[in-house]
Length: 488
Image (cartoon, rainbow, N blue to C red; front, side, top):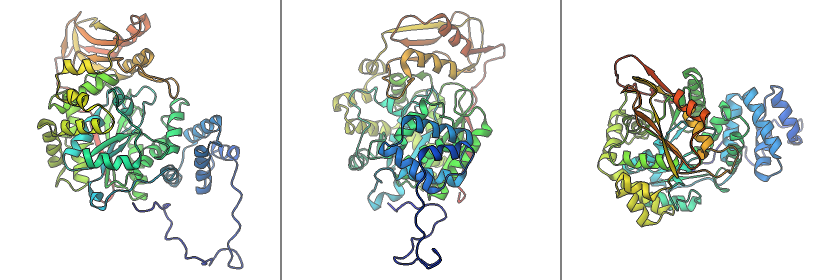
């Protein structure tokens, strides 16, 4: 893979070429690196960090000389004061270069693609899209993350499958891509270790929604992959990092701009996240629903987001088009849909499971079994509790955020880095937006390990159900717009 270069710099000077450096043609002595408290103070007071400042901070994070309090303070300073495009590009590059760079066979250059989501409730698109793209001839080296705040993490969902190993060396990743065409892994000490540390710290320091930190975290993991194309699903709404479309658009443009400055073709889709995606929320339940989608079935909104049949597709169709695997976005969407319907995506998923540590017999049973059989093979909560509709009405919305917050309390999310999760805890929506509902009809099934829902938890969940008097209607598409790289 080509070496990464700082935006705006040219080729390195030839050895012994000191022209223009110092009054006698000799290099000026390097300034003393600033200490971390000084860097934190500079950013806290609205100052601009130099490339050396940013690289010094990242180095301190990796070598352990930065204390946890200092890391948190710098993250908060960046969250409050922001970073310009060049600072964000340098931070992205420094995070990417904090570990080993991935190198692939030259023949794979135009096949390497990936997708990332800024996080939502019930968002299991990556579990389906990676094997679907592999079935379409792509190589998908997906470096993913864990849950942040109330949103679920792709790695956590996959770890609900017994034996699945998200830690893979670069050499192992190449074997996985050769065998299955896709892999979904986490940041190891070899791959983007600085971002792994900062990612965990953001989750517990209320800095999840920082635009430059989000950008650097996403793109640093993708830079080391050597991609030909990347699509980022930027979510907005009541359960997203950004509450409105304007803020999401700002992140989308930053991702596309920073990507372009670093030689990475990035497109960013804006999609609404007010209601859960699909019908299941929770790690094992979302794996079940992803498998259902790879059966050619599953909830329409999940399938649409994966296959991108919408006129402004954010995922599969756009990626095949951007990377040259399809002549148009519509052709790309049709190819992804075919991979779901003909079983080839499911076959790639089974290969990926077996290659990443799942017993081959279990992988086969999960991918060939019925929904009831699959549920027996994955972690299950001890109890189930159904909530009933409080009145007649048409389902206008099921608010995702209150649902996610209650499930977080029940053990489906983390309050501190490294905290274990209850992988069977979750919820199933028993109704669809636009559906007519009668009073007393079950609308939500909660899977819990502990005692019955408390009064406040039940009230919060019931308030998540929004009913109206209007006639039944078709649920709107979550897609809003697609921000393309300049050359597109």
